[in-house]
Image 1 (cartoon, rainbow, N blue to C red):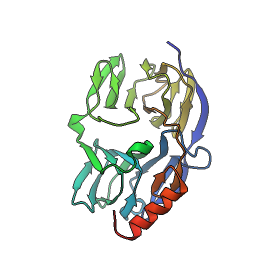
Image 2: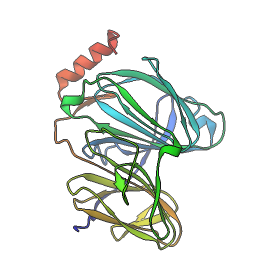
Image 3: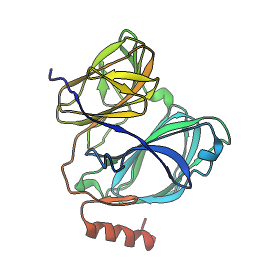
Length: 277
């Protein structure tokens, strides 16, 4: 197997989005604008209600997918098509915005820890105008495997140790793993050779990725290859490992709209303003 290595490191930048929710932006910032097919990665984490209570009031999307993974806390999702749902601790929502949707994500709590990720995944040109859809996945539907001593993995998308995650039917054939490592534990994770991939340490002080230490809140962009070794160091840690098939298509983006040409962006804005979402 050709092992992947780290060829770029990125630390998140502090920012705010929605109605002032404080978060750390890792992908979608000047240091890493995108990693085809991934357009954005945010981590939100605070136990101060003022950092998140205003939430994400109604806003539009077109042309890509949003993936919300809640580690702690409770948010409610509502859209203009009559759909609603709860994003509770341990749950995942994979939303394919397609041709257009307006939705809100608002806290259902007034105190306590709110912690999770939002990932934006591009859609291929042929799918940008499909009907919107959701995959709302409750915590009990996410399988957990123990492929090595001291290693526990939640398989959200893709396959590991013969177990497949519940997310299905995604054009970029994603891998999305939440890897918990005990001190000194290690595992080789197979990945499709041509997929873009990154690892992000989100709990513990650090971990080891591809033979190198990776600090908390640091993202490693990985080289091409068929596997990557992930290991614990002196203390337990958790690592997000995500991979997807690059689309290799032109990207035109304007806020919540991601298309292939500037003309399509203008059309998206016009459609939104005329109520066609």
